[in-house]
Every structure is written in C-alpha cells, then in structure tokens.
Length: 535
Image (cartoon, one colour):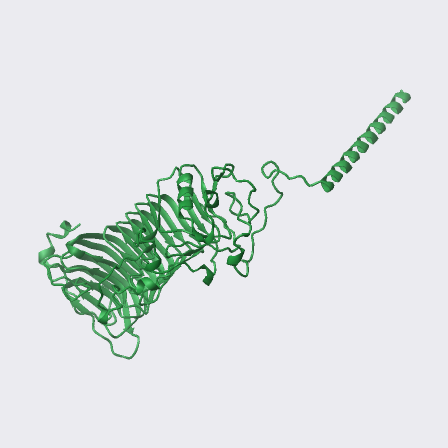
C-alpha cells in the first residue's frame, strides 16, 4: 500500500515537471517569434487592443501647391470615422469602391485634386455609383484641392449614402477647393451626409477663378451646388464656404450700383451657393459661409428641415445675399445661428408653414422677414411661424411682414416673442405697400394679414423711422394684431417717435413704450364673412 502511494507521488511530480517544461518552451518560442518577425496582421481578424487617439491639433499650415504631386496621407477608407488618417491602399478596386467598407473615393473616379483640373465629372460618377449601393460613403479625401463646377446631385438614392468631405474648405465661383486639417469626426449619423471636418483656413493660393467672367458659359449662373430629390441628408461640420461674391455684387444691374439705388441694363443672374429642391429630412449644422454671390441657402418644396449652429457673413451692401430663404417648405427649425449680410437674415416665402426660429443673432442686415408675398398678383399662403429668443442688431428692419399690392392669400398665426432690438431702424413693421420702384400703384386686392402676436420685444431703435409701423392695405385691413410687453426706446437722444398705423385692427394686452394709440379695436365689418376665403 505504501509503495503504491510512493509510485503515485512520483508520477504526479514527473507530470508536473513535464508540463512546466513544455509551457516554458512554448512561451519562449512565441516570444522569440513575436519580436523577430513583422508579419502584417489582419485588421478584421485581429483588431488593435485600443483605438487610435484623435488628432488634437491641426497642422500649422496647409500643404503648398508645389507639394501636390506628393499629397499628404489620405484619410482612412473606412466607415469608422473616429480613426485618424492612415496610408491609402496600394491598389484600389477597379470599380472605385472599397468593397469591404462601401467607401467611394472620388480620386478613384478620376478626380485629381490639384486645384486646377476640373473634377466635376469624377464627383458626378462617384455620386451616381454610390447612389445605387446601400450604406455607401462618398469620400473626398484629406489633403487635396478639388475643382467642381455648378452641379446638381440628384436622388433618390438606394439608401444609406454618405457624402464624406474630410477636412474641407469650400470656395464658390465654379470651384470647390479642399485643404487639410486634422480634426476627426465622431458621432455623426444620417442616411446621406456631407461631412466637412474642422474649419480650414483661407489661403490665398486656394482662391478660385472669381466673378461672372470666369464662370463657364455653358453652366447655370443661378446656382452652384444643388441637391435634388434627396431624402435623409445632413450637411454637417465646421467647414467654410467662401462665395467670392464681390464681382457678382458689382454687376451694373445690382441696385446699389446706380444713382439713388437705380439699376442699369445687363445680365443679373448670380448663383445661389447651396440649394435644396424637392427634398426632405434635411439637416444643416455647423457650417460657415461668407460672401455668397446671392442667397446663401435656399430651400424649395422641402419638408422637415433642421438648420443648427450656422454662421453666415456678407457686407451690409451686398445685394440679395439672404442668409436662409425658404419657399413652399414646411416643418422648418432654424436654431442657434449667427447671420449678418446685405439682405434678410431669414426670408420666408409663399407656401411655408410650421416654421420655428429660435436663438438667432441677426445683423447688420434687413432683419427677419415674411415675404415679400403677392408679387405679380400672385397668391401666397404662410401660417404658423414663430420667431423667438433672438437678437436683431444694427439692421434696416427687425421683424417684418412685406406684401405687394394686387396679391391674394393670407399670412396668419405668426408669433414674434422675446426679441431684443439693438439700434434697428424699423423694429416692428408690416408693409403691405412693398415696392422696389416708384411705379407701384394701389390695387383692390392684397394678401390678408391676421393673427399676429408681438410679445416681449424690447431694445432700441434708429430714430430715422417710427419703432412700430403697421401699413395695411386700403381694401384688405390687417386684423387681430396683438402687442404685449413691447418696450422700444431711441438709440440716441430722448425723442420718442409715435408708432404709425394705417387700417390696422388689434389690441394691446399691456402698456407699450412708446404708447400705441393708433390700432383700431375690433374687426372690420367687411371682413367678418370673408376671412376663410383667403387660404
């Protein structure tokens, strides 16, 4: 019995020694293999233990034009947008896409990116190809300058299309330039997204051909980038768009060029920077635009539009440079933005309803306007518009409704609330005699204006005009105008001007400064049975 126990103990000790020896041998062999060879490891089968860090600072200067033949390392071709740039593949697929990630690099469609070559066809091919694929990414890579002419990007797409512009600097006038920064993108989602990462610096060497004379004759001079029939698209990031609009503004036809605002004969077409047409579920966020030749953004026949944290600038005398114009568009949100230009910060045209504007700093400009409406005897309907929690400064107008004589339709359900005015010429204005020349005459029809609320509007006004101006049509009075907590004082001096009213019906819920005594109480008898016929 004792021998059996001794034998068992010897066997166990022998087995343990053998196990330790073989384990140590395997460990040493693996360690030696690991440190003496450099095999490429599959990123799919063996991912890194931790993701790379985001780049923390942009390069101090963009690459010089002379270095374009040896471009910087491009961004990774992956839908994982959190990664920093990595070397490009040595041999891209022939169809222009990375089949594993669904990325369509515009260079693989022939884009050169040297700032001189016309890359428009390559962008169109990339869009059209990716549009047929689910979950595709159109990649405009890091470190190149691409030139693109006036272009229409058309949908609908198969679904899940991303238009990814890495570290981009936009420049208008027929040319789209990109320069590098090193900020990464994270946390942005959407079915069709243009990513413009980080704000790039304006570099004179990136200036495109500017002005009407440089615009190709075969291209439309009314628009630059158009997105048509697109659903679920986001134009997001901190990129900059430089419209190079100076030479367009100086066309002889522009109103500021002639004597006393008159115009001279000649072509007057100027491009809208970015236009969305017949599209839905759109988001524009974080962009900066300066010096657009005409409107900065225009939305026609769109729905579900969300505009957040954009910055628009143009000189005070730049003509028709409306910041955001919407027409026949509904369910619109414009939040947390700064706009200064030579026309309306925001203009709301016919066919718009359910619009919410909040926390916008506007000016110098022509203010925030509904209209103009009813031009050329047209019918216009606008309803359920709210402008709130905003600042308007050093502007020709504050909150304005403007209509032409001879129009029809109605503006109703409008709220202007909690707005601060800073040296504004016409802080509150309804102008139903809007006219750009001296040839307009009174007509028997007009757009019907009713149910307008002005509450908690305070600040200062320019003494060249009365602080409140209600000029309503002779034949179609304004009705149900309501004022509450309105306090407007002169920006200079102590002279307080009286408000102006013409054929305006409404009430005061509180005392106002200055006092308003010109509103007519009740409703006009001629309107009692006809209000529902307008829209």
